[in-house]
Amino acid sequence: MNKLIQNSCLQVGILFCFLASTVLAEQNQVLHSQSVVPVDRWQISVSVGIGKKSNPLFDGDDLPLLIIPSVYYYGERFYFDNGDIGYSFYEDNHFSLTAVARLNEEYAHFIDGHPANFLVATTVGVSVAPETEVPLDAVPAVPSTGDGMTDDGGDPQPSQPEQPSFGPDQREVKFHRKNLADKKWSVDAGLQFYYFVNQQNRLRLRYLTDVSSVHSGSNVNIEYSYLWQQNNWAVRNSIGADWLSSEVSQYYYGIGQRDTQQQQYWYHPSASWLPYLRINPNYKINDAWKAVFLLEYQSLSKALKNSPVVEDNARTTLFFGVNYAF
Image 1: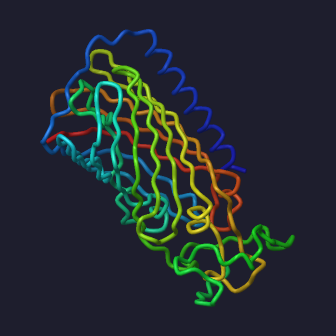
Image 2: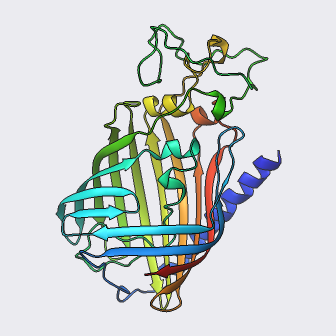
Image 3: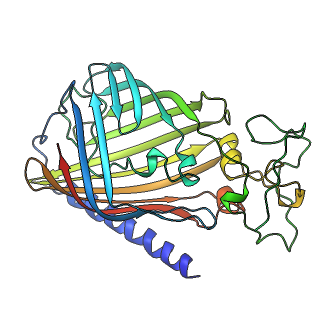
C-alpha cells in the first residue's frame, strides 16, 4: 500500500511539474539558441550529485546515481550519442533519418554493469541534426534444454499455454532474477526519424529489432519534446512511449520452461506499451558548469505488472547535481 501511495504521488508530482514548466515555456518567447552542436568533436561531461534509478524487478536493488558520464560525438554522418551509434542518411532543418544501433536497455534491470545504468543523459540532449542551430542540451530455477524450447530462451513452442495458468495459491509467487535462466546481451538496430517542428519542438520515431538473435523481438519509441530557454535556463519536457513486442516482453519478463519445470508458474506477457514523462531542467553557471535536474517516470503495462518477475508498477529515474563539460 505504501508503494502504491508513493507511486501515485510521484505520478501526480511529475505531471504537475511537466504541465507547469510547459505553461511557463509558452509564456516566454525564445529568440535564439544558446549554442550550436559542434561537428567532428567529442563532447565529454560528468555530472556529480545524488539520485537513483529504480529497478522494478522483484527484490531488484535501486541503482544509486552519484557520478554520471556523458559522451557525444557528431560527425558529418556518423554519430555516437551516449551509447547509441548511428549513421545519418538525410538531414535538414526539419527532418533527420538515421540508422541506429544500441544495446537493449531492458537487460539493464538484470545486470548493474549495463551502460544504460550509468550513461544517463542529465543535460539537455543534443540533436541528431548537428548542422542546424539546436541547443546542447522464491521458487528455484530449473534450467532446461528440452526439445520444446527455442535457443534464445524465449517463448516455448505453441504446445505451452499462451496465457498464465496461476491457481489461487500461486498468484502471489514471485521470482528473484537470480533464480531465472540467464539473460544475454542483445543488440538492437533499425531506423530513427526526427521531425523538427522548430527550434523548440521535435518529434522522434524509432523502430529497432534484435540483430543479435537473442530474443528476435522488436521495440518502438515515439517521443515528443519541447525545449524552453530563458537567460541561463534550459528545460526540455518530453512525453513518449516505448512499445515492446511479445518476444521482448517474454524474454525479459516471462517465465518459461528454462526457468522452471512447474507449468503453473509459466507466464507469457503480451506486447506492451510503456508511456513515460521526462523533465530535464538545466541552469548554466558558466561555460563549463551547469546545475542539472532529471526526473523521469515510466508506467509499466498490465502485462508486465502481472509478471512474477516484476514487483513495481513503474520505473523512475531521479537526479540532481552539477555537470562539468570538458
